[in-house]
Image (cartoon, rainbow, N blue to C red; front, side, top):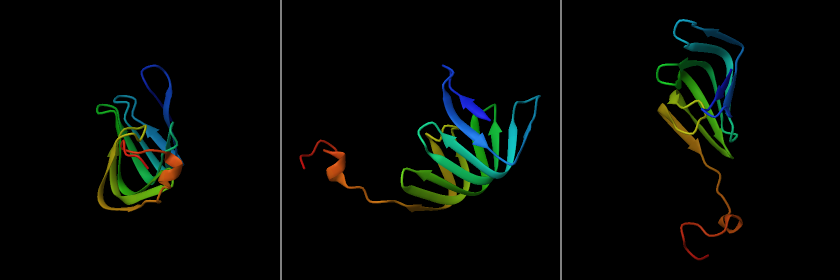
Amino acid sequence: MTFFDKDGSVRSVLKADYAKLNRNTDDMEARGSVVVTGSDGVKLETETLTWQSGTRQIASDDSVTVYRNEDILTGWGFRGDPDLGSFRILRDMKATIKARDESKEGMRGGRDT
């Protein structure tokens, strides 16, 4: 399944072993090795995921892993935008954050380095 923005640009792509679309509501349920990849490279992995057309949100009640750059977030339950720009992990969230070399990123926060 491909999610598009209002201008027709791809926001994210969802892949799964199985998906079922409710044609009356346009809600969707995906199961088995579900992977959502945002256009900026952020990736969500879980075993089940739903698309709720009314709220235009994706959701899961299973374990989730989110990869953003070299950072990894894990936990249980997920609610968020299909492009993974804004989301919540509902419980037991853990994060592995890779330290970044600020000298390669230049000045941050207006301070001189």
